[in-house]
Length: 252
Image: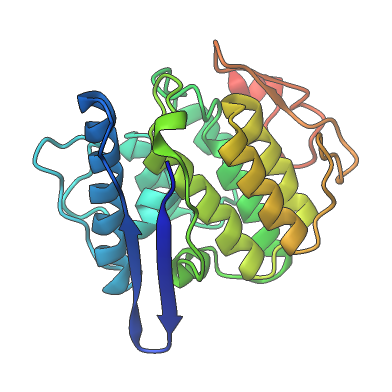
């Protein structure tokens, strides 16, 4: 199914994200899937247009467990419903003590896509600290380009199109903010390892190549073994050798 997207961004003008869906010929389940995707993107766009500190109303069924004072920034950084992790991250936005966070924030078995949710946060924090960027500003910028995804093709357990769209938006926002594309590639490969879907693979690599990243299938640009994540359980291999990251003792 094809989608047409139109995105505009200019100073003082709210970002307008318009998606056109056709539900003709889709099963009731697929129509529901598409409707949820469209509704949530509109909800995020509306909140982002009001600024990075705008709050997002909880959905009627509290589908994503967002509290009424959840900001778009919190939504983008923490995709699970672990509010303790979000609050702790917001108190220490630059993640100066990731090992402390790791001990206090349990992994969420319901979201196998992310394995260790702090992997993404730590990686982004390391990028921004080295370049004196404000982590929050990356998400306040939002996007200049949408991430069209075939929602029906992305249905691994516990994963929604919105989650995947957020990850792709995160990659693009980091890249447009000047992050090292080969460093972002390391995180992008982790997403692809889990999902293994061509629409995601292609979009991630298109972004990396657009910003000068090397199109390696298994990026390893930092000189240490890239962590290997698993679909069936939330464990990480090769993590102990990563400078400044968690060690086996931190996981206990």
